[in-house]
Image 1 (cartoon, rainbow, N blue to C red):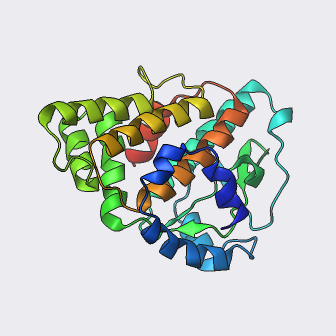
Image 2 (spheres, rainbow, N blue to C red):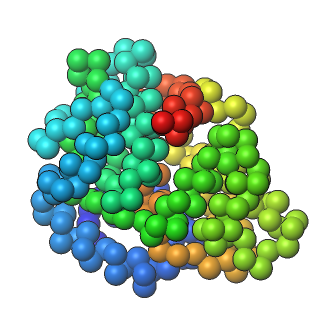
Amino acid sequence: MPKFIKEVLTHIPTLALKSMDWKGALKELGPLVTKVGSKTLDQDCFESLQELDVQDLILKQKSRENNYESLSEAERIKAGETVLRLYFAQLKNPEGLCLDLRPRHFKFAGNSLVFSPNNIWFSFREEFRVGLMNLYRGFYFDDDELFEQALKTIGLTKNLSSKEDEELKELFRKHFGPGDQEEVVFDLDHFKESFYELFKFFMDHEVALEKDFMFLGIYLVGLYMNLENLNVPLNVREVFLDVFSE
């Protein structure tokens, strides 16, 4: 297993790992492992990332040393907003996404965030990707019907009662974060706690999870590691609405 995957999995609750579709996940890990030796992203994937045209983000194939510690609060906020914008924008890409968002691949320079992606490229199953986007849309656009339909699309409400369905929706809202999401300080402990509660629910109600959930967890852990390192309040709602109003 790649060192990156091992590092990230330490931040995912053991309960969650036990409920994963490891047979399916290991099939996906094979191609990832073969790419780990290359420190730079394949050219076709790099160009796919460029086409997203993420605001305030500069893509470089050569890695740069992270400099978050030297940034002012305003620069940290801008860097954090750009990381969030990248996280959401990549979900719109049917070609796949760079799974590794750890801070070591980012440097703030010239009022922009420089991202040097490694070769950890992953493609969600299309129905899962669209369902995940609609889950976020339902949450941030306050569309409860879309939110519930997205949970069904991803396959999380099968055989649940209406009461259990409401409980699951509340757990996801808790995972996304309380309040209006306008001043969110990202914390890995909060992520692990809410992720644990979600997977405890899945196990208690025998909800089968597909392998894409493990890779979503990996994607989220990299995001949280990055934003926890910046340690500033971020307007997640505003960033999401900006990305998905395009």
